[in-house]
Length: 382
Ligand SMILES: C[S@@+](CC[C@H](N)C(=O)[O-])C[C@H]1O[C@@H](n2cnc3c(N)ncnc32)[C@H](O)[C@@H]1O
Image 1 (cartoon, rainbow, N blue to C red):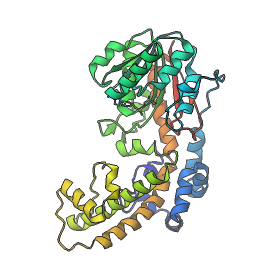
Image 2: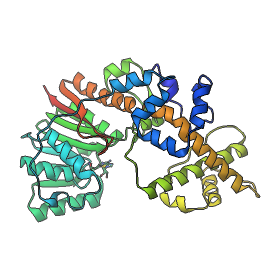
Image 3: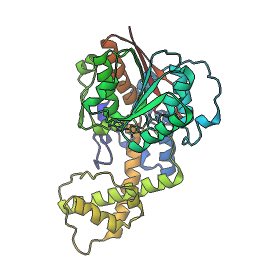
Image 4: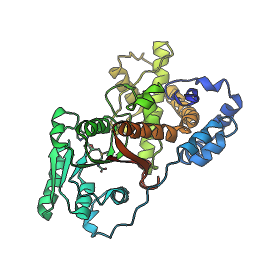
């Protein structure tokens, strides 16, 4: 609450941020950074803390408060490569470390928002226990069931929308529910259902807190409600902005789209003459290949903005590039608070469970190079 003037404003939406007037020398230092230096600071929290140490000493205190213990676990026996054949990137490391933190339960397992149920297959193998997987995507459900049938494995995937009331048919008291990287309202729903059904055991690694229908986040636990910290979706998004660096092509596409969005924002501000940011929906990545004028005309059409004939596209594209550098530099302030916000949200979930009679532990299940979404909640009904 004390530092909210630093982490609430989003540079993409506002040309001037409230803290800029207070720290002119800091703003000058930020503006002098090259794009490469900005990227390096954005990806290294310790360097970021050093950069802001003189002006924002509270950030270091919040960072140390956000330092969670790593869960200890015994390394699991090696498995045949068929377990991780076809798994993308670091997925196998995420699954094996997550599983190592939750193996040894004798309760039947439910895997929530299971995808291809990689985690479920591994836990089934380790504990030799019946696994029920719940997943919305019919193709992923089919792939999991085919693999289970071909291998004679005791795992059944069901095509279920976990936000629908029918899902409660699958959740019972004598169960161990696991959820690896279930997004915002998907894991919020799980928490409520576990509490309602008094589910015995839960292992949850939350993800993408901002992916939810409602704009305003009201804390889940009574203790957090009493502190009256209400977050909007942009602020929830800040919590998960620490990411493993994407591949070069993806980075280039993201940068191009952001430059065009910012260029369009400069254009629409001039046309509408109201100094207001205009929120655009997320656009398919193919738009990164469009020309700037095509992109702007598409956005103008979506937002009913009438673009005058003879618009100087080059001028607005250059403004977009300049704004991109400025936004990237100013956003470093918000990035200082990514992990504290993420830990605060995870603690809110832990407190909700604790208030409902669970024994809860919170820690990390893997290093943040494997995934920055490495927070794990372990809960068992006392
Ligand atoms: C981030 S992925 C995680 C998948 C898996 N747990 C893993 O870690 O590999 C989230 C999964 O939730 C599924 N999902 C999204 N909305 C859903 C819904 N309403 N009901 C059930 N599953 C959903 C997606 O299809 C996707 O497979």
